[in-house]
Amino acid sequence: MKIGIVGGGIAGLTAAYRLAKAGHKPEVFEASEQLGGLARSFDFAGTKLDIFYRHIFTSDLDVIDLIEELGLKDDLKWLESKMGFYYNGVTYPFSKPLDILFKFKALSFIDRVRLGLMTVYLTKVNNWKKYEMITAKEWVIKYAGQKVYDVVWRPLLEQKFADKAGDIAMTWLYGRIHSRIVSRKGAGMKEYLGYMKGSYQKMIDALETKILSLGGMIHKSSPVSKVIINDGKAEGLKVLGQDLKFDAVIVTPAPAVLKKIVDFKDPEYLARFDKLGYYAAMDMVLRMKKSLSPVYWLNVADKQSPFVAIVEHTNFVPKEWYNGDVIVYVGNYISPEAELYKADNETVKKRFFDYIKKIYPSFDEKDVIEWKMFREPFSQPVVTKEFSKIKLDYKSPYEGLYLANMSMVYPEDRGMSYSVMLGNKVAELIVGKA
Ligand SMILES: Cc1cc2nc3c(=O)[nH]c(=O)nc-3n(C[C@H](O)[C@H](O)[C@H](O)COP(=O)(O)OP(=O)(O)OC[C@H]3O[C@@H](n4cnc5c(N)ncnc54)[C@H](O)[C@@H]3O)c2cc1C
Image (cartoon, rainbow, N blue to C red):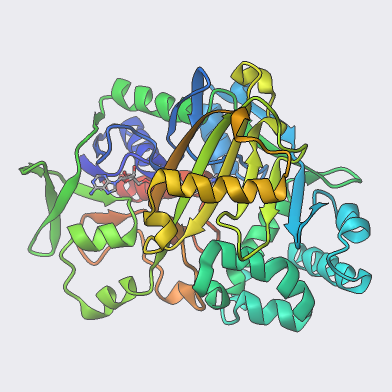
């Protein structure tokens, strides 16, 4: 079968690899000149670096399996992470349960116990469905108290979802806490995270090589403007003004893109798209002479902050991988309509630098060797209550048109492993059908 795939991110490339391996002829069309989507890399510090901060959890089995299958196991390093939490002008250690219990003075001892119990309880529960009908805000206030919500979870939800924070389903928070806790080991519950030496670009390059060697095709700088539908069946793609015929089509970008390129008729199906919103992400990557702190991941729980996290990548992986320089990501999730998202790079840089200085007064712009800014409009699905009712299925209302986008990994939150899963599953469906 000839299968046209829209999007050369992890989901699209995994699907193409599986289909080519099964003897089909996949053709990937990627709008940008580069493969990888949200997981792509850029040249920095004499090597490749992911455009956004990046690690995997030990529970991310689909991507770990793929990495091994592609022969890249030795490049995947498991390293201890150090977390911090910035609240009200103070940076607290936030890596291990004992840090939180004894050092997180932003909460009273009783509230710290409540926070700990809430986390332990959620890791023991194996039924996400019970969290569909309640928002994270309602659940946390009810079971851990207003103070725990106000100090820890409200700022984190607001930083990720801004004015939608109060609408986010508890399923989302449950999934986040679950995946983090299973990555912990030993009596001290240290957290180990995975990083691919040389960036995850290695996995993307390996997928590209495999797809091509198995007879698949990849077209970069090739935005798809239409999925051609005839008599209720997907028959091809319109790419750069040309009509191309396919036996089946897979669309991997966000629902907003899907709605633009497919002419869906059913009003009920179309109505779902209004609720399938995404938030954007933006980050600044810095190469510096000096380290900011010993922390890898600093959650910044302050509404005034223009970013949600400072991620000192070289406190996680060795500086020697970057010729001894320090690599720092400063990142934010934001509405694509927000003024900061649309502001020019210099304006954003100034706001980011001013706030870094507030957190780390010793920060000096002169120590920044170079910096880069990235923005992606479709970065984080906004998961509201009863999301399973609007979630899209792999099979669309049209015969031969298959979907595989990040919002479909619900009840999980988006991540590379879940995009590998999307690619695996959609390919399995098509192979089964063929
Ligand atoms: C800030 C940030 C940090 C993250 N950190 C992590 C992390 O630490 N660990 C982790 O596992 N995951 C992380 N993720 C999530 C991970 O990057 C994504 O889950 C994954 O890369 C999504 O892959 P995808 O193929 O499903 O979608 P995408 O990467 O969005 O791929 C869709 C592709 O479709 C293309 N496209 C769009 N429109 C068209 C069109 N009309 N024609 C052709 N092509 C089109 C796009 O250019 C894109 O390449 C992070 C994401 C963000 C935003």
